[in-house]
Image (cartoon, rainbow, N blue to C red; front, side, top):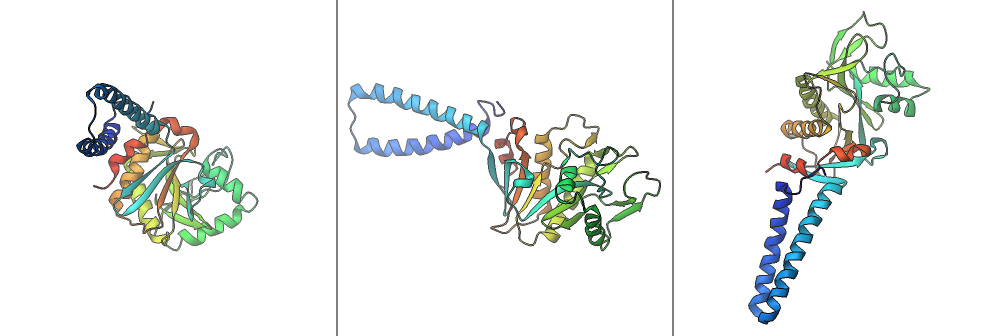
Length: 277
C-alpha cells in the first residue's frame, strides 16, 4: 500500500472524525439514560465502528483517484488520467529546448507525449506547427543560442520553461538535448525551468484552467539524481507553483494529470503537506 496504516495524515483525519463522534455521543448521553447491562455491548459496538472507520479511511487514502489542494489562493487538482482526454482550456506538452518537431528515432520518439502530440494533431502538417512555434517564441527574448553544429533537428535553442501557444496546447521547452539527442537535466535546471514555466503560464493563461502532466516523468535523465521518483517530481511541480505566487482565480485552476498506470507509485494524501497554511 502507498499510504502506511499509521500514516500521520490518516491519524489526523481519524482524530477529527472521532472528535465529532465524541461530541455527539456526549450530548446524547446527557439526555438519554442507558441501562448498565447495555453499556458493555454499546462500548464493544462503538469500538468496532471506530476500527472499521479507521480502516475505511486508510483504504480510501490508497485507492482514491484525485485530490484537491489549496495552494495560496489557487486550487490545484491532482488526478490520475490521460492528458489528451482531460477537460481543460489549456494542456501542457513538454518539448526539448529546440522545440523539435521531427518524430523518429533520431530526434523525438513517437512513444513520448511530445511525439504522440505531433502525430495526433500535426502528422501531415508539421510545417504549420513549426510556423506557430517560430512566430510565437521569436517575438520574445527567449533564444539562448544558435547551434549550427547540430546534425539533426532544429538549430535554435530556447530558454527552458519557454511556452508557445498552439491552439489549446501550451508547448514548453523542458529538457536539454545532448549531441546524441538524448534528453537530460540537472535538478537545478529542472527547478529553474519550472519557475520560468509558471511565469510563462501567468503570462498566457488568461483566467483559464491549465492541465499538465508530471513534467520530466519517464523522459528525462537527471544528472546526479538517477533514482528521482514521479512522487518527487510531482512535489517539485507543486512546490514551484507555490513559490511562484501565481494566482488562478475561481473557477480556473491547475490540474496535474498523472498517467493512470502510475497510480500505484503516487501517494496523493502526502501532497496535502504542500498546502498553504
